[in-house]
Each structure stands twice: as structure tokens, then as C-alpha cells.
Length: 164
Image (cartoon, rainbow, N blue to C red; front, side, top):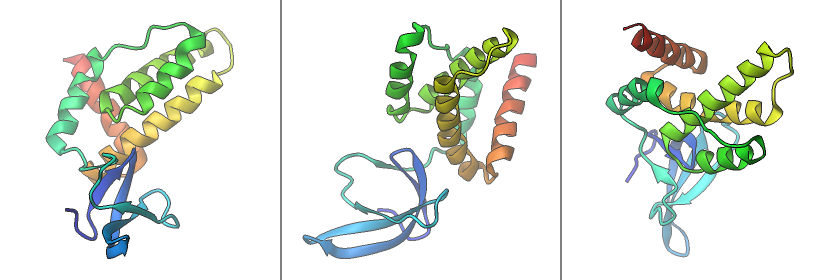
């Protein structure tokens, strides 16, 4: 059971437990969650977590292991018309490595377009932004850094791994 003030992940959003309502609805206890990106939003979730939408933040050790895997995580290899479906599937998987697959693939596809003097792909750009937001939001809370600092930290760690 989570305590008031603790961070957790609800679906893909990092939230803070603001309140615990006892016997709130049909005799069930509920967490009142506030996403860290939108303090005006309040989400009520049953404590039982029957749908499996609540989970702990990853640990710093798990985070470091994921960063070490980044250079070897493959990019997606599928036809352009199927890419959005693949992005959607990976985004809903609740797996950090899947977010990195989206980030790497969308970034490289956009980079290729820029090199060809073409505009960025809207689908790639949208999913790149979503995947980065979800990944760096959670990593940032674990590391105690803001979004941009977290993104730079991950980039620096990957570059260091590639140079060794």
C-alpha cells in the first residue's frame, strides 16, 4: 500500500498520492493521485489495483541497467504504413525498453528526413515526444532531476558507453 506523498506510476504517468479515501465507493478504499505534470488533475484509483495500472517507480539500479542497454536496443524495422500501429503497441506495453525503441526509431527516421531536406514526420515526432515524456518523467523523479537535465543525463551516459 502506498502512503500519502509517495510517487508511483499510474498507467504511464508519474503521480503523487495526495489522499487515501476510506470506504469511498461501494466500501472500497481509493487513492487520490495527482500527475506530476498536471497538478489540476485528480485521479481516483481503487487501492486493490485489479487492472494492474499502478506500479512502483523503477529503482536507480534498474534505471542504470536500462541506460546500459540503450546502445544495443534495436530500432523498429517495419513498413511506414505499419509504424504507427507498432508505436501504439509499444507505447501501451508499460515497458521502458519499448519506449527506448520508439525514441531511437523515431529520432533516426526524423534525422534521415532532415538529411534528405524533408520535413519531420508528424507520426514519428508525436510518438517521439510521448515516449520521451513518459521515460524522462519517471527517470527524472528517480534521479531527482528535471526533464531537460534527465534527458541530458541519459544522452551523456549513452555517449560515454559508446566511447568506451
